[in-house]
Length: 250
Picture 1 (tube, rainbow, N blue to C red):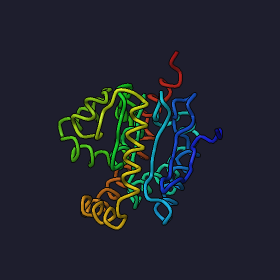
Picture 2 (cartoon, helix red, strand yellow):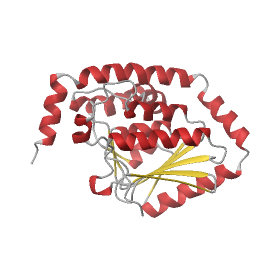
Picture 3 (cartoon, rainbow, N blue to C red):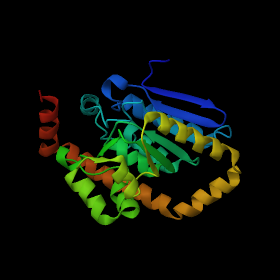
Picture 4 (cartoon, helix red, strand yellow):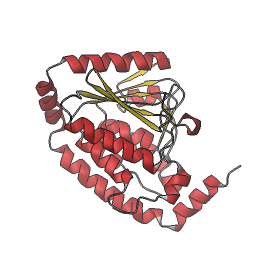
């Protein structure tokens, strides 16, 4: 297997984007954001690709940002790889299927809001600790979480940043299905991918557009609004202190 931090391949109509930085629980670097953005853009523009599959490892989906890399490559510019990735998620014209095992932190959770079908094992742990890091939500999660999971639960998850499991994620509509094991996650992801590749593609495209309605523009606008606040907060004292405390912890 390649040692690239993001593995990308196309087979039988399915583009696989796999987090491959297991020693860091698949924490995302700027390089990884760019690879994900490029993969999603390729999928959208390719007639060969019918479905995008996003997966991690059996013990970790994505632990959010690699804070050391994040501080070295802060997303202050609008064309940074972080924002490219989020916009590519919103713009992706193909169905996205995700399989989650282990930690899904920060963007590891919020990216799931843009996936069409998500399955998670009972080992999955979800968490969005933006406020505790002196930051604000991203990926239009301040819009999509209340819409998908209800205002009260979205407020709890985003303000308090508490951890929650696959059962709770399923109960409140963040994911489609909670299963017992990583093997079951793989089986379900493959089943969905096979089903989607066999269905009429024009019907899938139109149905996805109808389901989303006019949300795409609103989602992008919220991403921009969140991004402007995120970039400002990132320069603030609270964020700098939170990052320093995290990096200096024993």
